[in-house]
Amino acid sequence: MKGLVPIAAAVALLAAVPLVTQSNVVLNFLVMTFLIALAGQGWNLLGGYGGQYSFGHAAFFGTGAYVTAIAQMHYGINAWVGFFIGVAAGALVGAVIGLLSFRSGLRGSYFALVTLAFAEVLRIIASVAPITGAGVGTLIKLDLRPEAFQFQSRVPFYWIALGLVAVSLIIVRIIEDSRFGAHLVAVRENEDAASALGVNPTMVKLAAMTVSAAITAAAGCFYAQYFLFIDASIAYGPWVSIEALLAPIVGGVGTVFGPLLGALVVRTLGEVTKLMTGDAPGLDLVIYGSVLVVVVAFAPRGIAGVITMLRQGFAARPIPERGHD
Amino acid sequence: MLSPVILIPAILNGLMTGAVYALIALGLTLIYGVLHIINFAHGALLTAAMFAAFFAHRLLGLDPYVAAVLLTPLFYGLGYGLQRFVIGPAAHGEDRSILLVTLGLAVVIENALLYAFRADTRTINLPYAFNTVEIGNAFIAVPRVIAFAVVIVVALALWLIMRWTDSGKAIRAVAKEKLGAELSGINVAHIYAMTFGLGTACLAIAACLLLPTYYVNPSAGNAFVLIAFTIVVLGGMGSVVGALVGGLFVGVVESLCGLFLGETLGQIGIFLMFILVLLFRPTGLFGARA
Image (cartoon, rainbow over all chains, first blue to last red; front, side):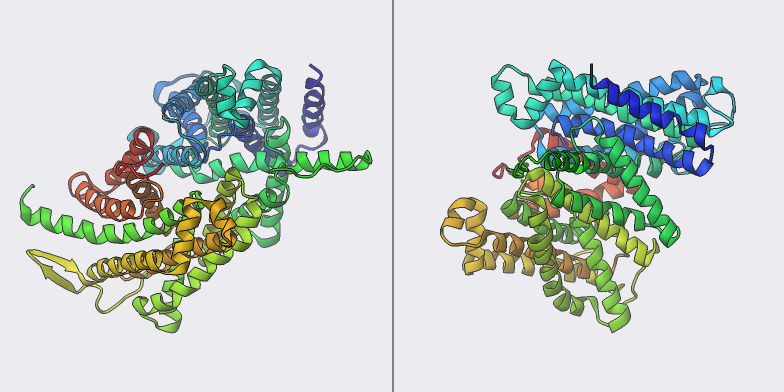
């Protein structure tokens, strides 16, 4: 398990941040970055390793957020238990959407379309259904006790968010080394060939989508607990789907650290934009969209790909041609 | 409830709205039929065209129907440029990358409009917007009748271009057999860009037809593009006839759903129809080529 050492090192480094500064601005920024990294890691498992590009990961994020909130507010369930119910609900939604679309043989653009449509359906339902608070949204009652998953200071939240990221890194790292991970990559590279070798592509993709949805749902559950308020356009909004795919693509699709690296870069860019222009609506997303196009055009393997290329360059090896991508 | 006095106007209105849907779907299906990509920037480009038509009226005093003459070639050029100089080179010909590039463009265009014009909803006032024509026992707004007629003319013109001009023949050749077309000396990058341009030009016309009766804000195009996706999937990806028939059909269904179920539920109805068709008949109800 040598792959776990870099994870431990990165997490230890980040865990030390609150010992250096307790600034709300810094911690808040990093918590949001971790959330995007977590949601992005979910996307990365399905999109990066499995090659199935979802445009609707908001479906899982939002389900996690709403289920956590509703479990507490309507059923009086403890917030920690609610968190896990939210993750399970997200996984279930992922399994159902996956089952429907993979059984129908949807791939490529069609898969992107159907995931987008499901996220939109859920958004519309959440904006009219009484149990979600419809247009008003759902508030989680303030109850600043650790038992209720609420804290006076941001530091515990910071460590929990980091802990979730760490778990997601480990899960993906373990999958990468497993037989299942090999099957997943085989399906990405050539579904028919994988199937000829005895891999069941539908089952592999379905399993990947379920775990992927669970990871992204965890980000949603945490979001609800951290801000104590959600509405349909926050929880199921297109911004979630876009940031969840942007982070791994910028960082490097199909790499363990891609989503975290990408989330750091993307969020930093967003903050710098805000600092330079004031809080102008839309401008951060203009930057995100441009970054997406530029990365796809000039660095299809993201930051991770660029690092690999530079290393090989420094080792005075010939840089391999970019081949057929 | 089912008396013809209510039903016939609803159906006629649905057909008129459906015609504009069909035009938007036509652009989408044209691009899919030739480039084999789903253009996720279609909605954002429609919004851009609506803003263009709005400001042509506000700043230049141009009637939307006059502006269409100006905006159609302009958006043809915009679409051509986007495909030739942005989407094509950026995507390295890989399907997944094309998806991401069009998504990225959609995000950029939509939010640039949001940044420039804020979320305000804008409308224009035209003296004839509320005039009606009597068809049978139904009163239909004049702009809707004009829209219907224009869409028929545009569809015919497009069919003639495809059928009889050299460019049209080249587009069809590329759609059928890209490699063969390239070997016969057809410049595929040029044809791709032309097709994208034609698809975008359809949006400019649709925007000008919508504006007299519709509003514009930075996300106005999204409502239409989802319907257009539904129509294209319903009619079969790449099928022009499918887009036209599907457009009219969805227009009528929407109008009747609105009558019986109310607006929000009608919207969900379209989404559900979309998902069901996508799941169970991804090649479309008209059985066009997959």
